Length: 286
Image 1: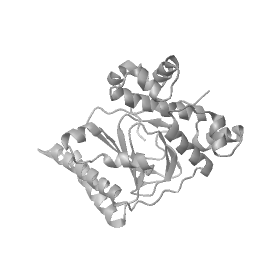
Image 2: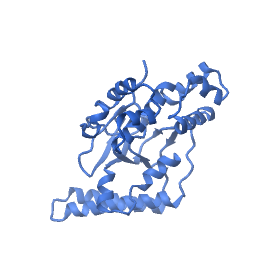
Image 3: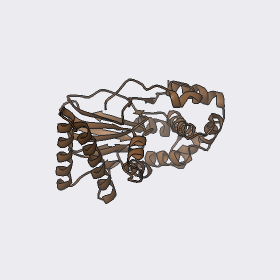
Image 4: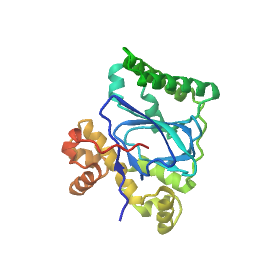
């Protein structure tokens, strides 16, 4: 049975801020969100697998996870795990501050598969100060506290955008085998075309069955499931942008619309035609 990569979490506000501390966190398999997600590690030992990259986070590292990006946290349960997670509605920030580009860092991270920001010591202090100021404002009940909180959230996004722009981010050390890394990149660039396991295995000079075993061991997903999920996420994006469902399916690599429709309902819990008005799943804070 193929592993399903599901949508998780919900967001009804312009943003939602979590400051969590526990010994394990919630166990969740590969998943994606309809919103952008920001993760700041405070303490603990956690690896994040984001699409074709794997990152080991250090205290006050910042992880950028764009909407529809498949990811998973792997937590060392022997250490307390403290983190800040922020769900962000990019449309709100683009509407509130047009032209500011506060969410561009998520697009850049997704485009270049560089999702991790590692601030310098002085930048860590700036982040700490802004986070503390936001949390004080969130706990305040006096006049203007909400506006102050909004201002601190925007300041935090500006700081993170500057981190992303500085290009001082350390290169993340991928844990994937070089052949699987190449295969993932090839799939991400060619998922709209017909792809077979045989052809992919030939690309990396492995036998079909060795390639399938290695791919599953490295990614946690079968080759077919990974390709299908990439196609579904692309089709969903096209539909939201106004593309008719049939064309979105074809442009994403689906030759059979009925098979696409069934897979779409299984993954998103709604039909392609009703995607825009579909309700959210229960919250999952990772």
